[in-house]
Amino acid sequence: MKKTNSNLNFFRRIFFIFFILLNFTLAYPALADLKADVTNQFVTAKESSNLQTTDPREVVSRIVSSALGLLGIIFLVYTIYAGFLWMTAGGEEKKIEEAQAHIKNGSIGLGIILVAYSISLMVTEYLVNATT
Image (cartoon, rainbow, N blue to C red; front, side):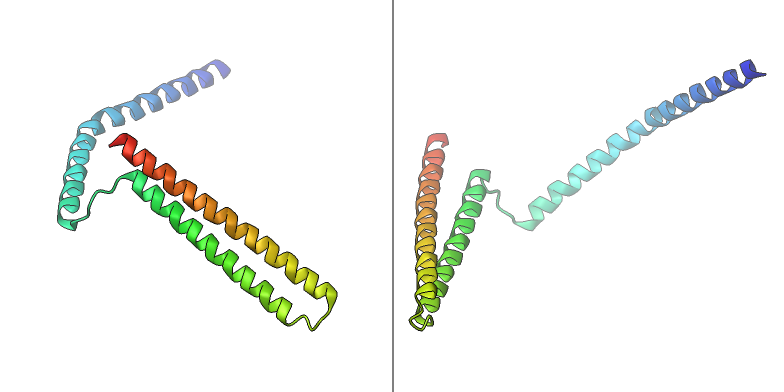
C-alpha cells in the first residue's frame, strides 16, 4: 500500500511540474506580444507628454543642492532661536552659556553646510565637464 501511495505522489508531482512548464511554454508568445504592446504604449506616452530627458547627474546634483539648502535653513533658524534664547535669558549665566553654546553649534553647522555645498557644486561641475 505504501509503495502505491508514494508512486501516486511521484506522478502527481511530475504532472504538476509538466503542467506548470506547459503553461509557461504556451503563454510565452502571448507575453511577447503583450511586451510589444506595452513598449509601444510607453513610447506613445513619452512622445505625447513633451517631457525632456534630463541627465541623471544633473538630477542628483539638484537633489543634493536642495537638501543642503534645506539643512542650511534649518541651521539658520537654529542660530536665530539661540539668539532669542540669549536675549530672553534675563542675565542668568546658565541660560546665557547655553544660548552661546547653541549659537556656536549653529555657526559650526552653517559653516559645514556651506563647505559641503561648495564641494558638491565643484564636484558636479568637474563631473559634467569631464564626461561631456
